[in-house]
Image (cartoon, rainbow, N blue to C red; front, side):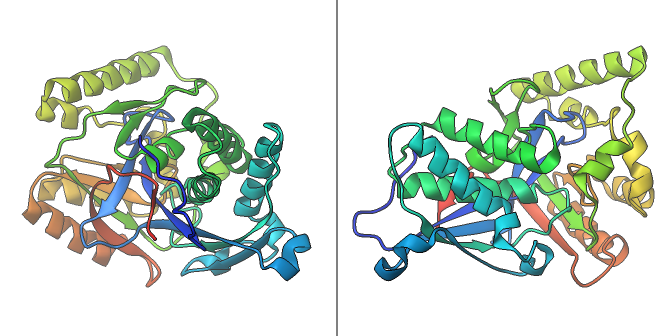
Length: 329
């Protein structure tokens, strides 16, 4: 991916990092899809970096947080993952013999935490991509990706790339667990993801705690075959088979009990013509894959009226965001 550095003479730089669906049902901990609402809404976090004033040069990093979900973050900037990213980037630069000065950093938190939309990954990717562009791409893409994965691991307790990879690179990404590798998968241009965050939170650690440590052999075999079938169907353009493969044998049977109204939503949306319905990441956001405008409209209306629990919640009809993290200056 071609990455532009800071423009000469620029006094600020802002990076946007999109939301993402982790797992996509069939690819537990291994698939992620970047999202772009059709109405142009920026569904993701923004991080802006600017120089510290000369008189404040010795005061260290400065973090300001705003946006619709800022109040849900820790009040102390030192407890914010973006501040941790700043210090980690500074340390990585130091290991290369480069001393970088602290900056003013502004996080505009546009994704709800605990939503299942890659909220922490969005903050991490936006922060580290902004810092790296500001410093003329000091870290290689591989080094930057590794650092992002490390920071994501601090939040979730384990390193998972299924949000970080699509958030950074865009599109649908295959991220084999236990590896720093990621691969692009073709995404059907006609498919749309109708997503609904109900306005409630579900912590990733809590959602993982309900999963069993071991799976029956039959379940493991079925999951592996379904996953392979999905990848094959995408590469061969067999969209009917691909849609039939979007089934979660690993997490959904256990997590569905944590999502009031999920079973009803799945039944209703499938009856309306959705190709597949699943849990986005750890939830509580859910998604419906559709390939017709009328189905997208009806799914959006149903979710807004029945799955959304309060005014904080939202529903969006999305395409795949193929651009990933990018400067929006």
